[in-house]
Amino acid sequence: MILKKATVLIVDDDPDVLTAVKLLLKTEAHEVITEKNPENVNWLLQRNQVDMVLLDMNFNSAINTGNEGLYWLRKIKEWKPEVCVIMITAYGDIDLAVRSLKEGANDFIVKPWHNERLIETIKELLDKKEGVKSNKASVKSVAGEKSILGESDVMQDIFYKVNKIAPTDANILLLGENGTGKDLMAKAIHERSLRADQPFIKVDVGALTDTLFESELFGHKKGAYTDAREDRSGRFEDAHGGTLFLDEIGNISLQQQAKLLTVLQNRQVTRLGTNKALDIDIRLICATNLPLPELANENRFRKDLIYRINTVEINMPPLRKRNEDIVILARHFAKLYAAKYLKTAMDFDLAAIQKLKSYNYPGNVRELQYTIERAVIMADESVLRADDLIFSILETAQDIVAHDDNIPLSLMEKNAILRVIDKHNGNITRAAKELGLTRTALYRRLSKYDI
Image (cartoon, rainbow, N blue to C red; front, side, top):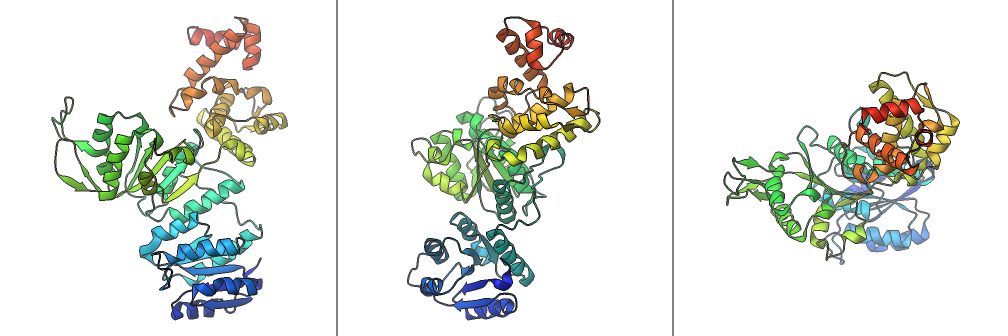
């Protein structure tokens, strides 16, 4: 829907805001309705074909919830779920505005806004409502291997959300299976934040024991424990001014959760062996492969900590749920690894593309990446065929890969060869055929890996 045909409702108890927005949209929209009292919104929605609501975050109303905007947002979505809602907020309420995205808001603007940007935002949302796609976006954290690409609707929604929340300091929880790109997304968010020039520190907290957890995150003083031979800053201090990314947050113990919660509440850390508290200024991003309902089990994870780390959640979809992105990603990896291994540009024939699309990818994007890398290494031609795509190698190594981003390709290949030879009871001809190799090539690998 174009703005010229749209009806826009503005709900704000500040008459100056109502006047300013009405004057701005008067020549842009079909009709502009203003309302000071949010309690009249339902009546207006029932009597007008409203396409867009601009809703203030704060009202001096009888509801008095402290965040009236969220209350009325829920009501609007209950009365007219198809209506687009843009929240109007002051800079100090950005966290609430970000939370409104989780409650169903389509966007938010910060006072004072830029008129051109407000009109552009309204137009984009109305177009999206009608299924008119704007130029495809992609979030790229860094060049090369660490690109996040996708044209699927689910990824476009994620990119849109990321571009909105990245400039804020809202804490973010990344959810998704192993291999879906949570670590790359964390880096991309940091690079789109106002802290991009400051440190980005990643910690795999799920792998830390209780003692290492405190020392690694909070630091220690020389002599604090047996192996503490010198003073050392913790990761919170290292990330001061920047972003701290805590990976596998769902695997930490309840005792560790209590210590982490205290630091996040007080915004201070105390090194082991000292009593001196140090102020910290960080943007926190966490990730877990646990589903949110499982994470919300209080026998496993503290709810108060979930609320603290989860101002906004982003669900990274498995590759099987974004089928239209598979070929895009495959071609990206083929180009990347052809350049890395000094080969000519490579593409896929139709049978290879069909094979790529029909596979289930239990290891997600990471599995696809290693599959294409191996195919490029082994290929003798510039066109990759279905036989060049050997998924069994990554399925063999799947459990290892899920726990180690830096697993060597050589180890994965060796494990796969052993598995396939064992499957065929030592028959080299059959093993070579399943692996997509000649007998000679397989014998070379047996020699290479001392098998």
